[in-house]
Image (tube, rainbow, N blue to C red; front, side, top):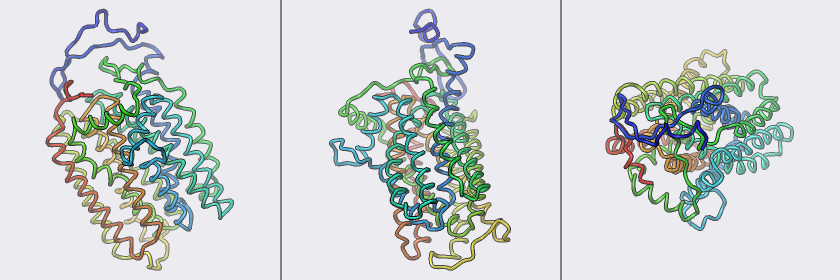
Length: 471
């Protein structure tokens, strides 16, 4: 152990106390100074993590947010999203179980724990470059739709790796009073990828994919320069808890322990399931259906920009000086208000058309554009606030990186399962499916919050005690 990582003089417990929690015994470690100290700072590493996702899922979001992947025919994009979220939620690997959710958790968490979050993150970046390249192929060869769907299936597996590593790192690096801030930093940088990508699409009218491919290639290299989590010392002097390399059996047992020691996590499952459900209606059935390509591109640019403001605003609330339970209930209330505000507003637009309604596309110079683009901006705010709160609630349950990886695995698996189902519904173009998708979105969002409320009441404490970290 290097001097910079050794306990202060003698390994003794010290006691710290802040306004948000009671005193707790911890072992303090010295942090490096100079450039090394800055580079190994948890916030620096979260910045780098954000830029990895800026280059990879951020640019993927830019393409997806155009509606139909920027194509006139949205079927290929919808089918590729089915492939992405199906393999992300239910990977095609034999894990000696017939339960897909457990299969997901065992595979991705075992890879993350055996290879380490740094290497798992890097492996997860590979699929994004291939996927974006498949759209370049589709622009050149209109019959390359099968390649786009196949690339989507590969991306789904890679995305499972990337998000499992990302979630465990982002929630393990900050102290309890910093979690909202770290989530906001990550979410802001990540969504800058959507902003930049949408700006490129708007300027180039979506005819040039080369810039996207080059950026994703750069993103593949960033994890090589990140610090190993075991070398990270938090700002309060404590070290990140790195999970041990575990066998498949231990992984399954870890899932069992998580559900046994924190059964209230099940009440967050509806919130997890709905976390990507609303994208289909927003991207394809609203943005993709109503607007010209120029309007769709500008909408996407504003959507991902608003995500930054939404995550920052929510982090200010969730990291405020009030007690953690108070902040949790306040965040829940804000989300409920946003859901009803945006969905009520959207309902009046949705009643004006169905899939069979021949409507002239709305351009950015149309008088009908202003109200609809502001609604789309509010959708971006809601998305960021929903995802930020979901991560924050998981971080409020535990500080252990291994346990957080399992919780994030539940989150991403259920999120992807919901997305796979709703994208397939959209792909088959069921008659009058718009209102069905829209109403199901509204119902799932409200249900997710209602189920989460007793979990917040019974499980979120003002401070995570050491005995809570059962694993």
